[in-house]
Amino acid sequence: MTNSTTTSAASQGNHWLKTYYFGRAAFSVVWVAAAFTLGKSTPAIAALLLLVYPAWDAAANFVDAQRNGGLQRNRTQALNLVVSTVTAAAVAIALGLGMHAVLGVFGAWAMLAGALQLATGVRRWKSYGAQWAMILSGAQSVLAGAFFIKQASGAALPGITDIAPYAGFGAFYFLVSALWLTVSDLRRRQAATSQA
Image 1 (cartoon, rainbow, N blue to C red):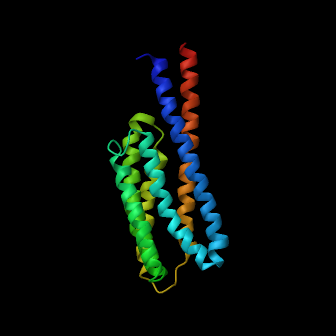
Image 2 (image 1 turned 120 degrees about the horizontal axis):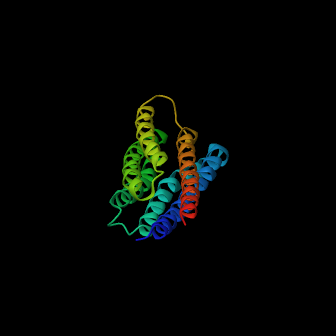
Image 3 (image 1 turned 120 degrees about the vertical axis):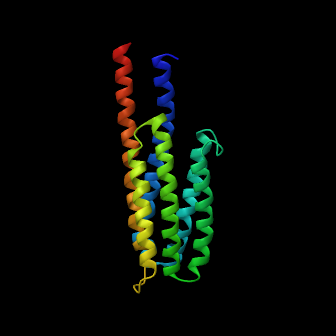
């Protein structure tokens, strides 16, 4: 395989990841904005947003895994799909029990999904590089999940605005990953051009 063929293959894979990461960042920004505005003042919208967030994560993991060889080749994302789908159902049940229960569910989900995201980032590093932000995001998600679980047992009544910063950090890391891949692609193209 020639250098230019390798560069082209890496660039095509990175193109999908960039699109995926930009899309996830945009969704999270919109979700956070909705949580701090509509969700903060309208309980029904807050409940809908809390259901949509893990469901979106499940769908995003499914699509990304399919674009990268299917669920069999991307087991961490297949597991994340299952975990996020179960979380959406658990949030629906927890909403009937109160926000402490919802925060506990989000905490458990953040820990599991974060560990799986970290594993996905490590696995992808060899193929795509520039996965440090996803690895860091996964590790921070695990810590945030532990914090949510601790908060869930506290006396203060949590709300959607307690969860929104978690989504905000997710948006930041997805955006950084997309931008980092963009810069990596530019450098790869410049290197290929200078060697031609």
